[in-house]
Amino acid sequence: MKNSENSHSLSVGDFYEKFGEKLCLESISGEDGLERRIISPSAKKPGLRMIEEKIELENGNIQVLGRTEISYINGFPDRTQKKIISNLLSNDIPCFILSKGARPGKSFAQHFERKEMPLFITTLGTGKFITILNELLAEEFATRITVHGVLLDVHHTGVLILGKSGIGKSECAIDLIIQGSKLIADDVVEIRKIGSQTLVGVGPENIRYLVEVRGIGIVNIKDLFGTTCVMEKREIDMVIELHQWNSETEYDRLGLDTKTYSILDIELPYIVLPVSPGRNMASVIDVAVRNQILKETGKKIEIPSGTRE
Image (tube, rainbow, N blue to C red; front, top):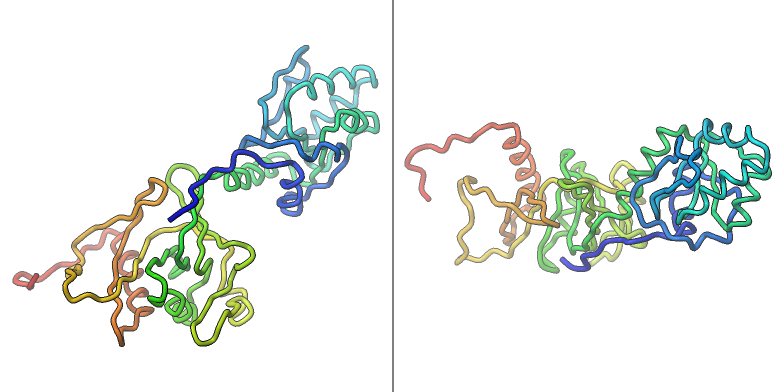
């Protein structure tokens, strides 16, 4: 693992380019302020605080105004509007977004333009918009690391496959995909910590859905097998590590050992599988995943007495 980091800020321009389409955003004014920084992973609504003489908003938070707030502001004469907006813009806010297709009056937008404050509108309803926005920001600002491995969805389980270079991780992935699994990332997996107990893995955009198969080269899984065989991201549920078979190493034979693998302080079920010539590792991984799913249902395997250790 390497490159542990945390995104501390995001420019409004990058935010708009990255999430504008998903959030149905349209830029209204203040394009000279696109370098302002978003430093908080959550959006806020000023609400009734707009009527305060000196409003104090959370620095670095995107502020969302709904139809109610816009109707309230537009109902005042220009002089009063200017005072309310000046109070809003006196805070260190990266941008404002008007929800539910609320259209500001001409003078309203002009105030934002003069202050070089980015102003957007979205056609989404306020509640839905804030929910989607906060989910996107939480993921964007999440602590993350990069690991070398393969991430697959196997039987609706997020499986991170680790192992030394050349041990056959990509070939296993191809076999599992042929059997019905889905590819999220090969070679480089970016893992983000969402909340306190969730890890989500994605692949870098420039190599997304690409797999290197020795003797063939780089292949595009989405083009070869179709969109049903790939996923953009996946929660990680377990870790499987491939080890080259070593006769001197003692491997778990009865499945009684419970091991975990720590990623960003989150413990995941962990299985070590020895790799040897002639062993169908894709089938072994398939069985390992099925067995883990069975364990999580609470079903226990009865070991006959006298079984050799």
